[in-house]
Length: 341
Image (tube, rainbow, N blue to C red; front, side, top):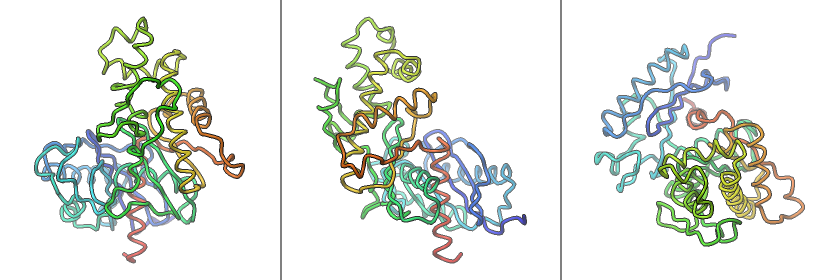
């Protein structure tokens, strides 16, 4: 097979690492797994964009990609940012340097690389990859993805396109309110989110939710549990491992998260009537037994549905941490096709 003449890159900028992938014109990804370079976003745009460019050269070498064949780059980052990649003037956890306030991330990287650049937030990029991996690149399907991490990311794909909305905040699924009072085990708890809402999905379904709300809530009921002796931040990081090994209290914490997802997905089913639901993140990047248990608990947490919706599949996000970069590359490939580059 002759080498491809056109290649696009996917760049996933995270808090501590930048992940890269490449997609050729035949639709083949040229890197398996992670290809990472340290992120230095806390040092401001000049340093960070230089770091992205340096890492791209490194990734080209690793993948055996001729830099001259790169025709476009897809970028994804955490938000908040507009649909065109202009970061919020209020800043964010990953962009604390004052020079980031209101910075046009997409245009800045485009100027630095001398290549066309597309932009998605990281949740939408991962959702796009999950969707295409299930339905293929040419489809009219609808999917809803929820990705559990430090926060709760995700996205909605309709007709193979990311729903970004007027201001780019489409797919901010973590901040959709759910009836948290009806989640078994949450009686008396007040789940607060960093966004200021009480009872949104992220306030129950994230590592932050475990640390801030769920673990303290359950430890108050189980004061003799071994985690009660640990600092709460350290203890929160141990919950998943203990849950995998069958610890009753830790399983109850993840049951709350699964049932919260069930309520959220029920809302999305009644809005979009999707072809698939997709779950990603730490709760499903686990042992097969725990993953199956968690998915079963999600379905158990969904209210009774119409007969036609009972067979709606719940998929696990493929490729884990490389999903964002792959989705960003798919978005860049779409632009190349539409512009005839």
